[in-house]
Length: 277
Image 1: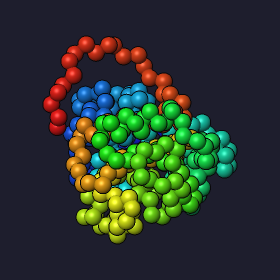
Image 2: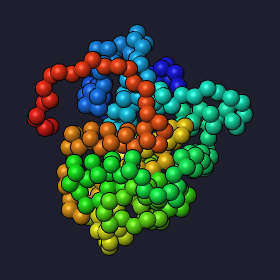
Image 3: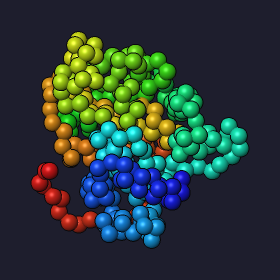
């Protein structure tokens, strides 16, 4: 995806919502972005070029905010770019960046194709994923953590801690809603959430109250599943919690797609801030 297209998407999103560039920059910085607000303004003005890593963080930060205000806009990530081919193959080669070329049904077929391409469906749990779910459980102190893949009919658990059953029907799964989000899906108390208060997983076992799920991107940038933390008690969800869940989700994606190639960074010898926002 070209930087010019991302700039156009950002300008449109800001003009059609109540979000400001200041809002975007604060969230971008909280997710690990390294560019200043002044430089971000220069980027939107076409006066500065950003590395793909920074473009991706900017897209993720903006999409989280857009999801929070209920906007349908979506900002593409620069790393979702792929070389073009011809006919149907050329559209597929674009991955998620070419989603606008597909109908809704075709997009779902491409997403399902990406799920299959992971080669993870119906495979055993693996330590490389289990270590991430354990870290999530230790951090969030919840009853359940899952790495889930969503195919055409069910939720397959590649890694699971807690009372979440395997092969749950897709239509009742909270994760089925998460994969439609540009950013995370946060449910602080499912009994008070109109989307889920009548869900059988809320009314019955496992009696979900708190849910936080982050969509996972697979081959071609398509959303193939989620990393989720679940509990039977309502709870709050802080900015620090959001950053941690995103970091863990990126680790899962690295296990699925291969590690990202990031530029070397100087060692940070400063002390870690202790205050929590």
